[in-house]
Image (cartoon, rainbow, N blue to C red):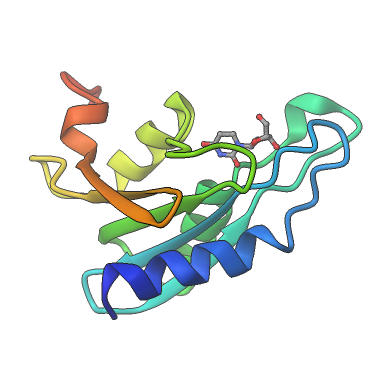
Length: 128
Ligand code: THU
């Protein structure tokens, strides 16, 4: 699956966003090293801190299916061009990558894709 197709799945997932409070929809699509695909959307809660981001939703599905290595993540919001992962999600993506943080993060600006690395978004990351 190429990055265009991965982004299409993120766009589809964003349509299921449950975001009545922020009205900010997000969809994500993860591809793992074994080529499996998982999607997620953000889902909010009246107790705001319980909100789950789209990326973490998708990664949770991957982990529940036994996957442990993320190759790339496409993220899309109809509300913002180049919607990038929040700091918490950067750290969660980092948990499931190689030490060099060689994960492609795919963003969408109008009809163009932008590909950046997790390493550039999360330099000097925390590891145990
Ligand atoms: N959100 C995500 O889904 N992913 C991010 O990386 C940033 C923020 C969601 C959380 C909340 O539902 C809405 O966007 C506004 O913060």
